[in-house]
Image (tube, rainbow, N blue to C red; front, side, top):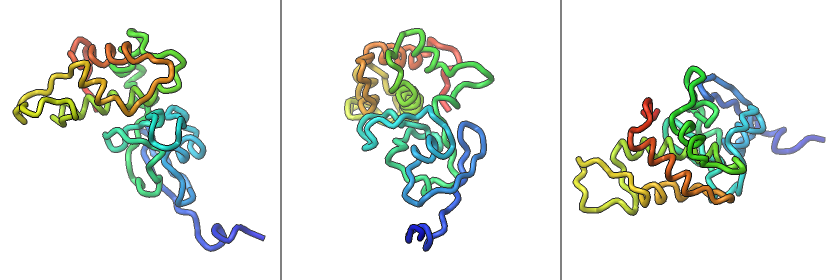
Length: 188
């Protein structure tokens, strides 16, 4: 005797470009992007932390924007591009954010690091696009560049938790990349 749901509904196929590689997976319509990546496509960079969108360990870049993959249904993202921390290096050269994390020792156990890195890359793109945060000076002219202070970095990264407490080093790494001190720090 079969599962009534599975017998009645054919599971859909979802096509994604994951870290530059086209991938197709057949999933249950209730499957999150995180579970599709980890359990069906063996992409283990994004981590399952809280599974409620509260820790940021599952953060990926989805069509260029940082996204909590545990809260995103995979079926809704058919045809999308997903970049994980594993997909950030180009030609075996680490992304500037990854290099800065290593140089500033911005990790301890490493569990949150892929999500932190993807969030940092996405956050830098948001700043570049002029997106304000809750701590951005409201008197700032829309044409002015947002100064990425430590308060700005902390506010913008507040959705990514580190149970080891590497926050000062994470802020320092992002500050270095944002300052342009690291060549090739353009974000994708």
